[in-house]
Image (tube, rainbow over the protein chains, first blue to last red):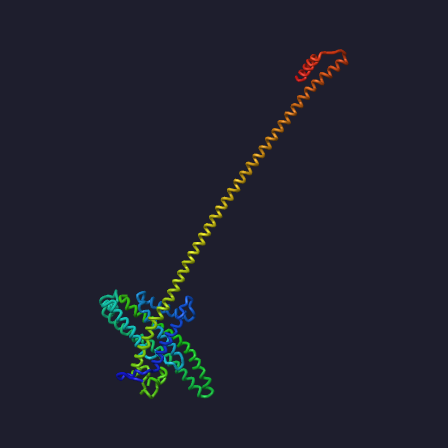
Length: 234
Length: 184
């Protein structure tokens, strides 16, 4: 469709499903909370449960000061969750199964941590890399380890989500592929194809769990990293 | 190429992209980053400006309402307690009053009964006295009559035995002597 400076910027399946994710999330939340019922409807309950769930997760790990990040964390949770769940529809594209998307989200988190940390605490933010109560002899080594661990966070955060989604979907597709290839091998093959079919059904259930769990894990880790930005001396 | 990628591994072995695994195909990175920035930006904006304040206000409204209702319930409970306390006080007052009334009534009845009894006793005593008086008059009357009868009888007897008259005073004297001797 178009390119800018040699970079392809066209509308793709990935873009389509990102838009779908945003539209579905915003649409659902707007619709669910539209009536502002004192006694919530079922949809409003779901929206409120999401809100409370994310708010509690963030408050538990980052404390009351961490609540400034609530919109970011909530957006991340909803985006990842809805994108993961969209991926469970056959023929749908899973946005979070592309490393560039998860890496961009992880970098967003880490850059927020770094920027907020330096703006809020100045160079005191570097105290994050110097844990208290460590003997001076091993301190340089600990600081190096802390820095490496900090730098590896965006990688682990993005790869965990990406790999989980990708691996799950590949497994599903491999087992589903067995069904078709076995069923071409006559009556015995059709009988044998029930095994990968049962496996596919079971894996689909598991993948729904993984879709939610990975969104949750991503959110929890985000909250913990943001907590470092708020309280660097812990 | 991207429009042909209908799922994340859809064309993993496809010949069209010189064998690059789609998730690692750098040619899609630019477009994905751009659209991620747009869509996530929109999502963040809508959520932070509209949805989250709305849910927050709903939850706050509800907790306010619950707090209000709890306060109201507390107030009503206090009122109920007050009402119960005043009722109990009224009850105990009424009981006291009833007790006093019963006590005074009993006292009154007792004094009245005592009065009536005293009156009756008085009457009885008076009647007794009267009766005794009457009896004593009757007796003394009877005794004087006995003297008379005796003197008349004596006179008649003497008259019949001796014949002649004897002074009444003598007879009376004689009878007096006799009755004195008998009394002794």
